[in-house]
Image 1 (spheres, each protein chain N blue to C red):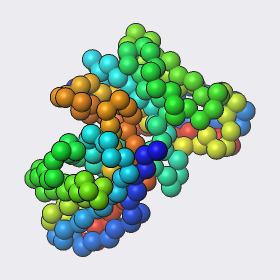
Image 2: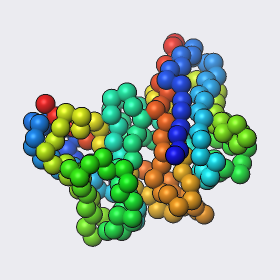
Image 3: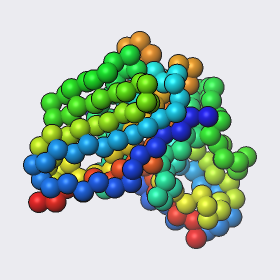
Image 4: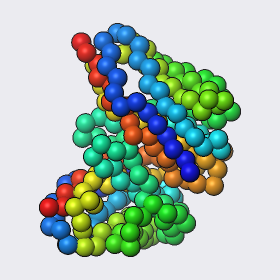
Length: 111
Length: 116
């Protein structure tokens, strides 16, 4: 079955870059996603990448996909205190509409 | 425009009681999903609706859990004879096709269920 894994915690200083990593096992994944969850709020879709892409950049966010190693990363440039949240990676694949989520990485940004 | 809404935002119930959780998807979204987020765990898929039918119920943890959707809009998740392990945040999402096989899911704020 599918499995998505993330490290639990990352602490960075304001202005530094953050890199959040995720590994997945399902080679038939079609899309991979990054969601952000702030305290008391729902999940917000940050960005996604199609499985035939290697990289996607969207303002301060860069997503890298290594299909061979089934590794996904999210880089946040110039991290701000407002970026403090839990970040979830998720995958979907053809034939299954439900998303499979990792357990989330808590990003703490220190001033 | 309005996003996905859920009610109640918080629910405290006694073990053994039944609860109903409601989800109002984004207008026009044909797909609706229920997920559960337990303390310290990721999100666990429960059930997916396309219109009023549920082609994927594979995540429902037991027959105490059921869900329905009417009019292709509002959905209700019902938990019968609640147990303490049912305590979690129940999240609803809706989506529509945005291109190819991409279905962006938009999440509601969740209902925090506490079973005492």
